[in-house]
Image 1 (cartoon, rainbow, N blue to C red):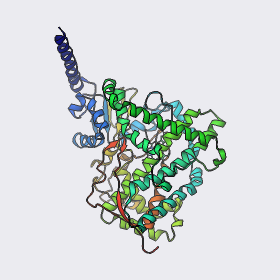
Image 2 (image 1 turned 30 degrees about the vertical axis):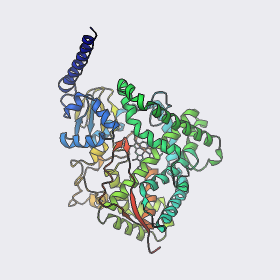
Image 3 (image 1 turned 180 degrees about the horizontal axis):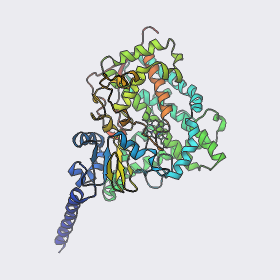
Image 4 (image 1 turned 180 degrees about the vertical axis):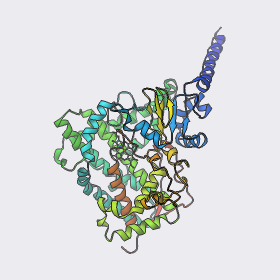
Length: 494
Ligand code: HEM
């Protein structure tokens, strides 16, 4: 009797899966959208590719094959057009934003990145002063201090004739800067030439984010996987939030640091004047600011440095520009760096196209039927623009696979004879747009310009392995960055 029951159960399950697959492909409300049939039939594939770090590369291929809109699961659409950015993330939905597909694990505390509209407005308002022009000016000396340490450390490496892992050096610098701004204390990464336990845990945690998504959408699969890794993921998450909250509380109880325009000061002042922000929310926001503000900028710096070194002539042009624009490196300030080195800034812009720190699709859900980029989309559909696929699409950019800083130079943009004249620059939105765009964009630019200009002013750089395809990496929401080994020599004329 028992074997028959098992056979019947297996047959029923298989029948259910086949029926579901046929429905998804032929009868689902999204059936008219093009996409890979296997993924549409079996949506779990999307989660498996994400968990193994391969989702974003696959989505680029799908867009190359199917065009500007791709249905890549039963209920998900990915776009690559400038209009889709506006339609999905823009201000067009009034005060209501389309909900995010959250990967926040159950039980964690609200923060600016993961919360509802009401909480978001509250956190965004509280944090806005920390990202104003005035605060940026207050933060300049603090940031310059860390860049000084970076340059001194790289000089030591150069003097010893050692290769420098620029991925690591940029990470150490931005972690120190953002730790000081978010928690009121440096993480001493540059000083110790090493990551802290908190940062190592962040790296490990980021790689399991897709696993947590898998858990949320397929609890039964998760139960099996979690037998092997569940406890360690849970412990990593708990450690992260505990260290984040403890450090935030230390800053809360030490108000001697007020007056330098850091993130915590903004949250605490708002809390005292208007609606209180609980200790748990302070910790959660400090933690998310640290994660959002450090890895991203260092990723862009590493990616841009790689492409500048890999593409003939680019690093030489930028070095020459920086060295002739500034006689003394102390002349490189936030203001002068934004005005005097247009080619170097264009390199950062092109880095944001080819190696965007958030390369993936930021998923939202349509609360009602909507028109996105001219396509009628039913309610309840998961939609997003795939950043990297949009940036690498020949529909948006001429010579999309080549690193061409010129495409961002204003004089070439307006030159009809330039091959980049018709580039659709609005299709690239590395900081997203609309009410939930990146609050740290100006800070990120100020910091990245300062760091890159100072490195180019001081050092001659070369890739150790010129044949390396460094940017071919896995992605787990963010890139799994590899070491970027460079020969580094102090420039001769200093
Ligand atoms: C190159 C550097 C950076 C890039 C490419 C970047 C990109 C992004 C993107 C794409 C989003 C939207 C996320 C979403 O919709 O889920 C975002 C949000 C955010 N970013 Fe950045 N970011 C960078 C640097 C920074 C820095 C330096 C900070 C400062 C702490 C920061 C803080 C934030 C915060 C707090 C949010 C959430 C904003 C909100 O929901 O209102 N980011 N960032």
